[in-house]
Image (tube, rainbow, N blue to C red):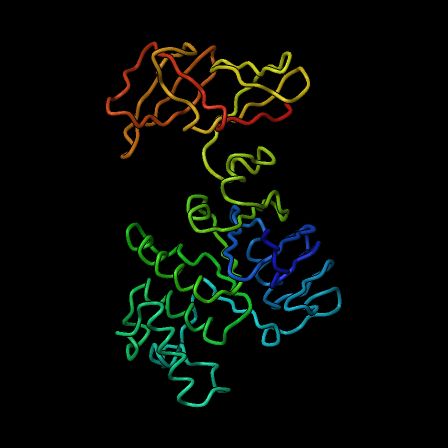
Length: 342
């Protein structure tokens, strides 16, 4: 039997308000050592405000934050950032332009003697694949290299937790995937509690051990990426994790009927909203009668628009042939369908 370790950082019922804005509304979240938590939500939902109160840059108006078994924040009480043992990497990275890569990573390690400091820096440069850039200046680095230097510097003092604000947002395509792989390997080796803020649902699900969904200052749902995706707690939570078809259904005797098919329903008879992920619909030889209205090439798939009884839905077709417009049939995968009260 696995026993869960106590959280490295425990955020309990935290509220933070600015004039005319409730940035955080009773947010509770536990960050655990050796695990990566992704905080996903749209711009302006309160993600950065949560980072700032956890880091000690701002006070809380209600609730508490504990870390390392001691109180860090409460109304009228805030341990300053330097006393928290929590690292923070903002989007601008804030590398020191007059220091080399090695000197940036070594910054803040004055408590160590020179051999220990040199060993710690060498370890981190190797971990983040930066050893060959030790003597380079920040302005000569690529965006991915700058990102890794900033994270290595934040980990140099061995914080109990590390907060990262949109760490991969400035990177594109293959570079993003490459940098993300190196960064995640380095972060996991640190065994710290990691909180990554992002607005990219695909990135969040690929990266996270634990996922937290936020909207309008409130935490909508937390859990494993798989559970949040397949079992969203609300329509708002479902929308945060990618495209979703919302279809009006009718529940009768434990069955929810829709123009695209039926699924079992553990809810009272009456109207409901059926949420169907695009991959939950599949063109087939038999099934619900639909009309294929439009087809667009999407690289690894074709995005297909289907219509039935005046209702439109989007599916992703990954078969070898290109679907033709006109009459067709489709089936639903019940694992990719969820029902909500209308």
